[in-house]
Length: 308
Image (cartoon, rainbow, N blue to C red):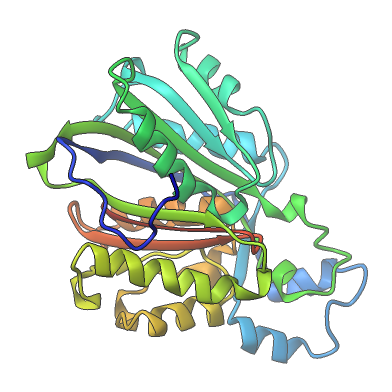
């Protein structure tokens, strides 16, 4: 049966709650002067114009002994160290990454949960975390799974040829990991994953319009107005794209959470890492309603509404 993207989803008797959060950023901070000094081929003849266009100040890159795996491990340790979730309760681990593979089995071993299920979600790129939410939500309907651990980790400083490419996308690349523990609660709990949309597209040129479209459909079919959204947390892509999405959805810019100018664009890890960091510093409060949107390599578009 063809999915009707504009229809409201059926009401279920349980809701998936985002129970615990964790994040990890690497220790090396590369400012713009350092970035330009590393380039084997000049990325641009006008450094000032590129900085003005992207508003970049620095990006976090992995140093010696750091990579997508160590970032994922540290983000998971923070989430499980919060006291709101235990490794013994995690029966499902889903990992999404643009720059590493087969991390789910390593995390299961790290957690001492060889009896749990681990999956690596590939080919969703920057939309990986949001597609992971959809996957974990569906799998938690199986009573065999008490809690799911969703991890997004990316080392874009290594997965794209930073020193050789002439592109603003390379200029904003960063590294990070984010982790979320999810669990099913009774529907009267009222706080959790509200709704989501995702689909693939053939025309990469239409990706921006499709992101606007999924955001508008989520708001409309859940009878929400832009002012109902506490925070807009998109993938930390180019600032002009992020701000255009915010304006197109008519969400006030003071509700936009974007830290790409100091962390860089960490692809699939950008949303959960930013969300966890803002929860830790008290900006995002438990129960706040969040809208997230991402475009994965121009071919995977996803959006989600959820309570942090």
